[in-house]
Image (cartoon, rainbow, N blue to C red; front, side, top):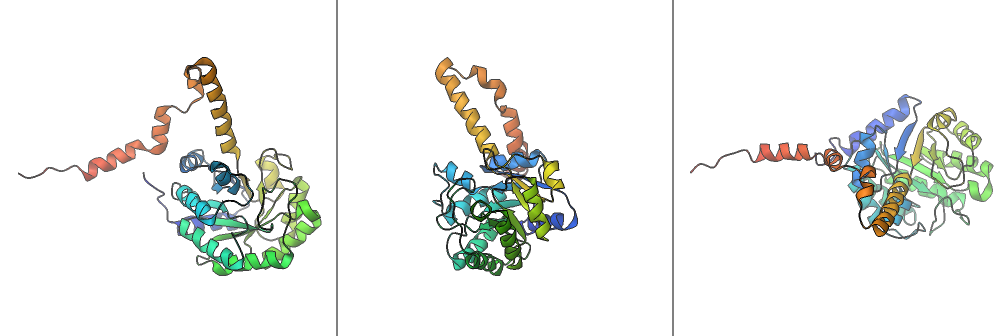
Amino acid sequence: MLYSTLTPAEKRRRLRARLDDSDELLRLPGAFNPLSARLIEQKGFEGVYVSGAVVSADLGLPDIGLTTLTEVAQRAAQIARMTDLPTLVDADTGFGEPMNVARTVQTMEDAGVAGLHIEDQVNPKRCGHLDGKAVVDLDTALKRIRAAADGRRDPDLLIMARTDVRAVDGLGAAVDRARALVDAGADAVFPEAMTGLDEFEAVARAVDVPVLANMTEFGKGRLHTADELRDAGVRIVIYPVTLLRLAMGAASRGLDEIATAGTQEALLGSMQHRSDLYDLIDYRGYTAFDSSVFDFTVER
């Protein structure tokens, strides 16, 4: 009922423990709203991801750096508080210079997330699987990660460094930059737009921190299975836009059906039933709480 039963600090601690104590692969589907985060937890996944591309799309905007820290942090807070799972959020380039990066980290801490990633693209950034990306020089990239680590107040908050240099200067440059970002204080690395398992393996061999794989649809690489990624040394996998694409695809087909048939009758079998929605929201819990609070009589 209401929000998560765990504090943000406890969720961060648990995420760190899972990453430190085993070689399991943590699966983090992207939540496009708080209710979808609750569904992700119900289905047995290990974490929730908040994609910058999804936040942008939800606002009707392209993923080219138009969203603000306030907008992303607000959505991250709404999602993180709705689930006991750890939430990882896309913090783009940190929304400014190194001091802004430090502020971003503290704002995301206050939002209740378990971790965030900062990337090395130039401002304004663009979707990691679009062509024409540009990255900052190594010194600027390192300053962002140092600022993030210095700004952190909770030592369990996961600071992840994302690098987009693979698409610009090749795999060797991505491996070298990943090492440098870890030396600068990154707790994990996110090499974007890898083209195959061998590339993930190369990054995983080069660093002694968890590596994240981005399994976004219609991107630069193949959609690998969880077992394949685990065997390649990947520790976290995100499916950032999958649920939004599924939902929007279904919505588009549904609207076509209503426009053509004049009724949604044929769509009922593909809908979430009212009872399932009520179960996910936990209507029973609210009813029980309300009854316990207001179960009294007034003396006359």
